[in-house]
Length: 486
Image 1 (cartoon, rainbow, N blue to C red):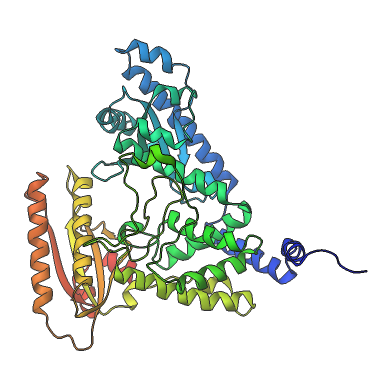
Image 2: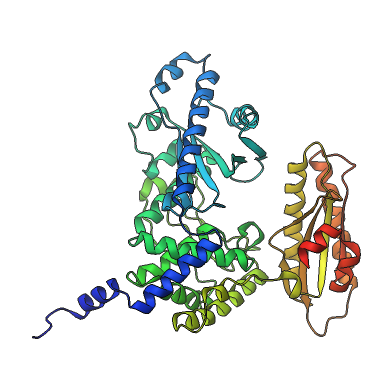
């Protein structure tokens, strides 16, 4: 009998029934992820839904008590039951034990931002289940970060018109930005990004398995800190979705193989986009700033990954020349390993092997600060980290430096109450000038001192920065950090 199906039909049908080898590869991945605490967990989903309900109830009660002197608006919002919208990976169903729960709090305009980030945060901090609460209010998107029970939560705030709270107008429509101030718009953007991504995914279960694998790979290879110029969860999500758009029915092993091969050889800084957006004339005239693909003075987009919702933003604006080089080297390594995994020659453990930062560099800049401050510790750490990131870019621009690598995690010594950051770097073979580095260290110290004065922090803050070779680290670091590193 002649097969009258089209080539496309045969291809699609064929991809719906993976081979036994592909099933085994997928099963091995699920087991490996589970062993590492990754992969979807029904228990973790239930726990986060419970956390959302608890915070929403507490927030609703606080709104009511805060609006007692404004009875008109209080009467209107009493009928509103839900003031919280989940964002991020939770909306995609990718929920692991270590997953952060990003929540957008919708508030009537009568609730001031300073009320939320001071009075509400203080009330929240008094709850028995809340610990390690930190206010990050100086960033473009302010956030209350804390643990509720053992779930890490980020709370964002957007003030909206009452009509959106009541459901008379849809919050999914981009016209909502015309009713918001800039701070609320930037916070709300994450909600629209999550919605846009979810609409683009056709094979959700397969997608989530591949995304969990990418998250574990990024974590173990030291690439999961977007603040430090690496790849955050949302960047990985968009890159993976780009691959899925042209490989809709591929099994997870093929998806990951194509992912690493495609982006290791991508013509950066050509931007990665998964969706073209036409928001209409009204939104084009809005005051919201979108990512501009045209070259800009003093701004270089080394690895632009663009959000699929208005206003479009570059998620990887913190990527530098060196961090892009590090990411691409890791993708090349992963691409080679994936070929052998798909062929049955290697296991998934090879892909997820941990990267040892300290084995890859012989020279480091070591930044140290005391953490026994009773006041303004979070503010001080945020300030110091921001100046460290500036320093890394300056080192990166030195022509004698081949590569700069800020360790994606800091180290706390509980014996000495100190925190350490490490910047590994490689000089060009012809570089012998140490004066350039000494001047940079001196400039960094003066820069931080001036920022301490501007922020009106204590003059007694202790910090230092030194150049150290690998063989010197063991003699200058506390024992608890030495045991963790080596």
